[in-house]
Image (cartoon, rainbow, N blue to C red):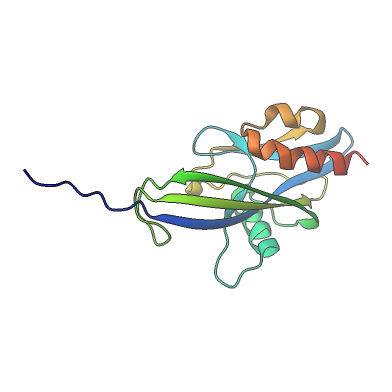
Length: 157
């Protein structure tokens, strides 16, 4: 009877950056959300490219995923982290690898009339502005709500 040997599970680490984007207008403060490929409302973020700073990556990802052209970074909001199992092989991790992901967020402001446009190539199906007082309930991911709560506290000062 052959002996079955399981190879040890490989692990990897990924880093991403993004932003919680807001605008002020006559209705008050609004937060920009996107609908991700998992049908959850969240914020723009993505991988940090080689040689790119955390802030630079966050700004680039916000601009790409939400179709924004002008953005001003006001403050770091911190990071969240989680583990996931890689569903497909890529340059960073083989299929089945356990990956520890870190996402760094920044508070970003855009001009009052800024319109949002989803990056369809990244399977972002919608983007929208949400009033500040509804943002925490609108956010789909519990771990991201911690960073959002920090942003809301900063904006209410």
